[in-house]
Image (cartoon, rainbow, N blue to C red; front, side, top):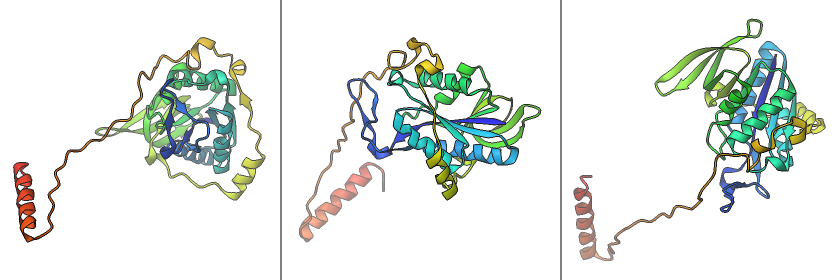
Length: 267
């Protein structure tokens, strides 16, 4: 069994910066981590390998420093990793990103499962996993909270999918794409052995020429999504201050507070 886990390196939540001219995220000089929701995909892939055997591979599209995230994934238990990096990919939206990742998965070879995190914390769209499925013409189950059964011989799996009313049980043929939510597993910490393996690991890098992707489908020019405007919302509040320095003004302040609450039917 071969499982591929696409992961993303994202800025720390408090370090997100946007380029107001291009509408893209500024990543240079910003502390980055593995997308927290991808950790659940990594963990369930490791658990499936422990039960069924096989190989699990992490793949990431990003700048060269995204290799750090891939090494962390190896330290957690992934067998190997591939970095997809090229200046031609800069500014890719979810459509272009899923196109490039699908091309990378094709080059890696046949996979029984592709497991993605629910969404990335920097874009918050949840579109890349289903986009990969569309490019590869594979069935897709999103918001998977549990993998009930996995039969590699019969090439099918059954999963529980989180929906508004509760849970939905789906059966799918393999290969397929799953996007998983936090309920699916509890991510483990990297082990010392894993860290040693990660330090020694050589991560191959593939660019646009390696994947033979169409230039018109990648990067900012190949992205149909456009951020038209970026602005910081202003927070304004209207308030009334009633000073209460002595007994007389305290009584007045209390009367005003009671009147304020009664007017809004709060008391």
